[in-house]
Every structure is written in structure tokens, then in C-alpha cells.
Image (cartoon, rainbow, N blue to C red):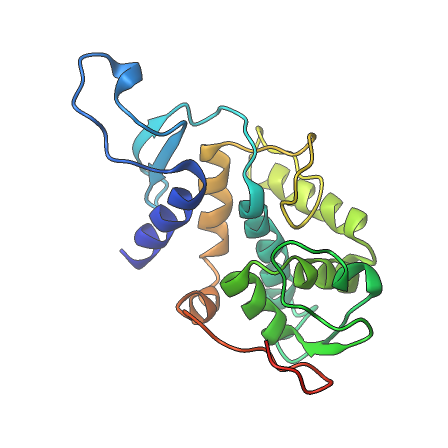
Length: 206
């Protein structure tokens, strides 16, 4: 039930999930553009509407960014205590961010928290550079993972979700990758945080 609720909550942020309206025509049954609600563990589909329509998903792109990060941790290639360096490229991403310092060193655990709680673009790029050497190489990993999961209507062009005309996904694929993400129990340690602080190397707190 916890995972089903989390999946519904995540999908609502992008696809404005709404309960079906009582109407005579099936195509008018939903007020949202696309709907896909399923059980995260069994994959049983509860309801769906235009679930394969390709559209922009904004920061829900970070679901795949986090999935790659958590897979790295599960495979023993990264740990929550590892230090993540922040380049000028990462700190200058703009948009939603944790205001990381250029040249700063942060614990992976803190940056994961900033992505899940604050949708931090700078933290995403810092991880991308740590794991794959560059954001472009990291995006290749994201697209490879999408193929492995059978996400046939998804293409990632960055790890942040910042606008790119070549980036898209669909309701069904978002559900698939989020189901994969929440199979990592550690995700829930961060997702239950409502507000928190990040301490920076120079002593700032954001």
C-alpha cells in the first residue's frame, strides 16, 4: 500500500491524476491529459488513459536520475558516505537547486536528499559527473536503463528535466521507472522528509 500510494503521488505531480468523471463518452472520462495507475509490485493496471502519449515530464526526469544513483549504491559502486565534488558546471545549473558551492565536497547522502526533497538540479549534475564523468555520458546510462525497463516512449536529454525539445516520456513509462525506483527501500528514508537543511563547506546553511 505504501508503494502504491507513493506511485500515485508521483504521477499526480506530472500528469495531474484525477478520478474519472461520470460521463457518457469514454474519451471524456478524465480531466487530465494522461493517466496510468498501477500496483508498483505486481504491475496490475488499475486505470489508464492515453498512457503512451509522449509529452514533457519536467523534473520527473529526476526519477531516472535517482534510479541510476540508487542502482550504483546497490551495486557497491557508490555509497551514501562518498564525497561528491561540485564543478562550476554543476553549481551553475540554475532552476530548482541546493545552491552548491563550486569546488565544494558534499556527502552523497546530502545530495540525494536535496534531489528528492528540493528537486536540486545542481546536485543531479554533480552526481552525473561523479558517476559517468559528464552529464552527457550519464544521460546515456539513463537511456540504457530506460531500454532495459521497456520504456519505449521515453528519451532523456539531460538529468535535470530542464526544457529540451528532444526529451519526452509517457504516463506508463513514468510509472515503470518510479516502480523501479521505489524498489530501493532507502528511497523512503528521504521521501518522507518535508523540510530540511543542507550545510555547505563554507558554513552556509540552505
